[in-house]
Length: 236
Image 1 (cartoon, rainbow, N blue to C red):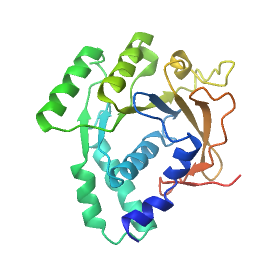
Image 2: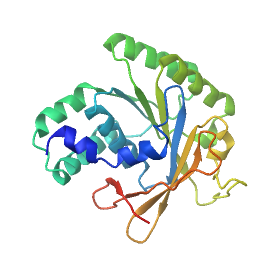
Image 3: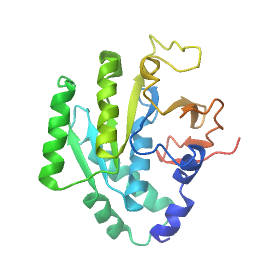
Image 4: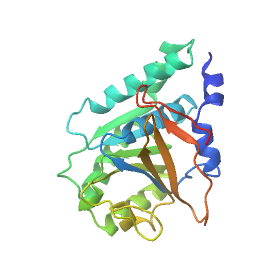
């Protein structure tokens, strides 16, 4: 299968359609779930899809292992190539590496001015202008509302959309009146899109909790396969 055909059949098109065109530049979105449910796999699948569609992705990682994210990209790409019988696999992977930049951050260095300075130096030095910024492993339970406001300003300044992953903790799974879990609900006014991943017996389901200012968003008819770690269509 050619890349163009694969993109047309991609479940990410379902995501974009349900989100009424997508997250949108200048906006913040988040995938939230307990640890190990599939947040990183989902973000990486989305990133690969966007890159193969001609966009540039800056992936910020707070993982302890610097090779962690690179391994995720390789694993998810190989599963995609196998699932779609991709004909131009090496060309596509070269495009992936060319249009993706990974920046590793420490969980102890959360002062936003330092994070922004690091991003500015990296993008200026490389000439890399991202269309989408992914922030994986950001510790929402230890940051303040002002910090997210800075990220919102960054999205606007860079004319990028920023997607986060947020970990839910078993000891505090409290939901607010809108069904949004802690700690994401502390920042819900700053997020345009909030999606929660919920484990089911044979797959992981996606629940759309917030969609811009839409009062009753459509169901997000997607699932994550725990074996392949790929997002796929899900009819319910």
